[in-house]
Length: 313
Image (cartoon, rainbow, N blue to C red; front, top):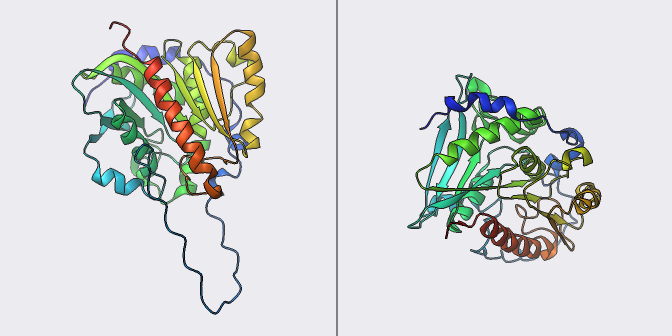
């Protein structure tokens, strides 16, 4: 465990960012994959279920397979409690270390609107497999029953409600704390990037704005900040979106115009037929989500390696 009381004053420097309201940004998302099944007509014999698609080991597991991957991972993963200045409740984070001889860059993994789930922990493990120290903070730490976090909540709906209540400036201050804590890890090489999903994608974009020395940020199907906030962006951003996610995609072109005028790097990819949350729901949409996941994840790893390369070598 490590403490960061020395960084208390730094938290006061994180500016509040102007983002879309969480309730609008994620309207309907929490119920996306929990709808009731349509009634089926009786049949003499039920058709055989389609064969499950084997997991691609180059990808994070999907939501259904994440727990199994975590249980069988050879990498060292552990929960860490990061001291929060002025609070008796620590910020809990899942940390996975890569198997490598030299020091590694850090990637901060920002969870979806569902909190720190097994799926996010699985993504963290996959990033460690690719050579990064991956740190996934539970931004609901201390907000659950008896001061717990995501793990203390009775269900997904409660997590969604709490995440929607998070204030952007408080969230950015907590992420800054995580970055500073991670920079003290003996195995870290001083380089750091972020990757976020859905609500976390929007937050990853915001993190790049509030952290001008961040090496890069990856945004998976998260909304873009407003034009005033984009004027302060310094790190390069990679945006990855499903074509059939108009709610989020509508925010991309306006951001591209603002950043193009500033000659600020903002690389975007739009994947045909894929929906929102495609990396978590790889089996959906008749192969489109799987294809999007394969392309997006490959580019994610390339981008993170490019931006966090140790320039001293």
